[in-house]
Image (cartoon, rainbow, N blue to C red; front, top):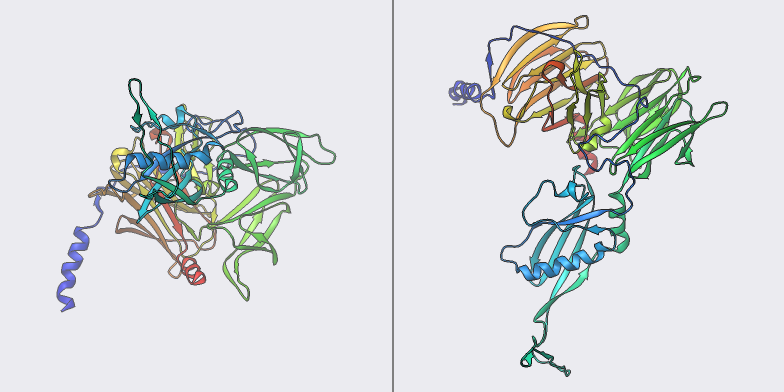
Length: 537
């Protein structure tokens, strides 16, 4: 019986596919060329799109309260009483700004809000529980959470103690309310130190400092804070001065801008370090052991400066109390006076959110174009751009079974063109060019700097919730990479599993996309994810 339905099933799958093949676009495209800007050449300045990027240090946070969930029919007077109780311990730690009743998108910026307290109220019998999330008003970031629990207490009808009745009135004496019929007794709440930590974190960022010379002494605002490499050193938001010193060299100063909740990376290059480089090893999520040339170095995220140039084997290992499991291994090349980075996104669920900022590098640097993370990856164009591709490309990825899903918004949301690419270090590349309505696929070989469109597709019906999906999957046994548009596999290519790979999110100079290029991006190594799940069980 199953054979009877097979043709029908095939017909339905074809009919319900996300895209339809259209006439191939008669056009050639240039291969994206990635040029990493030299870290530290220019000082970071406020982008103008994130008001929390400040040149002046702010010591006291401004905050507001937002109710996200309230039980249906809950008394407004009781709600106001609970809000006052919540507000009391927080008002000692920051400056409170009351949010308007009607939602105002400019409220946070105009009041310079640093912290949003999102409140969720739930009720069970005579207890009220308020869950509080401490959120960044710009980034999709939480600084912490707390729980307040209140017990509803009622005054007894018969009093065993005497009480005074108080009267007032201009013309005659009138009795006040005899007693408060009910009130809320605090059962549990976070400590003052916990709340203070959340408020402090809302004004703190981090800086990681690398140098071609290990042991380079680092001064922050004139005070020695350590030696390079210095990872995730906490600083208050605003402008700071870093100084670098080593024997026989004049001290070097550089101003940096620290944005609360983010990490600023600084690289100091000494001209006499002609044979040393820096290695940075990352994983998403972090916490894997890093073994370089047989020596255990530390856990991801890991960095080391002053590494002699040459080739080294690197292993990513999950260590337990009685055994260890090797996730991946690869050979890296340390180049003089450069940072060599490699990343292992076991499961990177939101690859365009602020959490993944360090996973991306700026391509083809230009003062007229910027790619920043005020919440999500955002493109901006200041002036006309020279010919080429602009955007970001990922850290080096280890070749293995890999799934990459890029989620585009609806075509009506785009004001330019978008290029999504995957390429290897042998300069083979696959490009999906999106010009709002259509998707054009280009394959570049190692020697090609320009190639024609292979095939073109158009989306049949857009899903408001899901958006439009582009997926790359690899097959290590068949040495292939497959490209999907929505639920339809549209191309299959031979692929190189001997070199590192990179992913690019780009826009062309002649149709620059301004704003958020992707709704979301997920990257994962399926085999490693399965092991993680077994490991956690």
